Length: 346
Image (tube, rainbow, N blue to C red):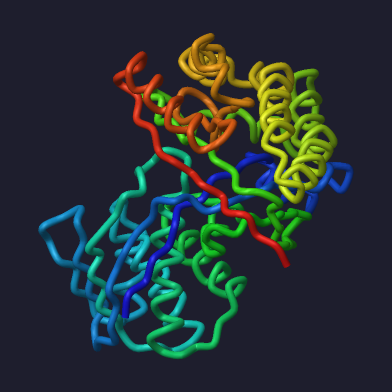
């Protein structure tokens, strides 16, 4: 059978997933919240039952063949390779559900890798969904997310709960993070929305960003840490609450204004914690480009922020096309991807 899993874009609330987990040790920290949506792009695979774990992928001429043995799967999961994600989920599926093997032919992928769109999480969700479908496990989307999460956590990757939201596909969801608990709530969308994801072709060090921001937790013992906790707590909650309303109304102009506000507040409160990574001159050059303004309502950084990826919301589909053409012409090193969020009602 064929399986497709999209990437995921965090429209609002990046970093609030891991920040909210610190409530386990400091209850004065505010819960995290985020609005997440699946991308147009994703990972395609044909999957079948097999006695072994078999992976054929576009990324390598080498085919992975591994016995469904706990020790072998765990050893592969702890390597620094593309295969680690597949093995990590297979390991968790084996110990939780006593499944057999899986043959995965990853025949297509148009999702950019390592661009803040949760490509590793998408791989994990795809494998979790494949086990669910092939072995008729009867897992809900939330349970697939849980299997994928623990599969990725079996690898050296330190993903947050936010990443596995790609399991919901093109349905925007509101996520909240309170200590070790999280919730997911699907959102309606009042009108079609047209966004652009822009690979900035810049350099960023996500590990350094996360390390510096985590130094601000669990206790805020200096002014910079106080500012970071304020943004990822009360400021972020207010922004996300307004963003949910704007999405439900299908109000692209309000969403754009909130993106601009979120970026400005992030620059003020969070960037000083890791200025060499978060000052992001390439990101701000794009966001402030005068010729782009007639076609967009606003934009902001993506994922951990920095000069990795930007998100823009266009006035309409025609403006989306014109903005992509303008960026391609003026910033030829950058790569643009459409993100269309369809109108969705109860």
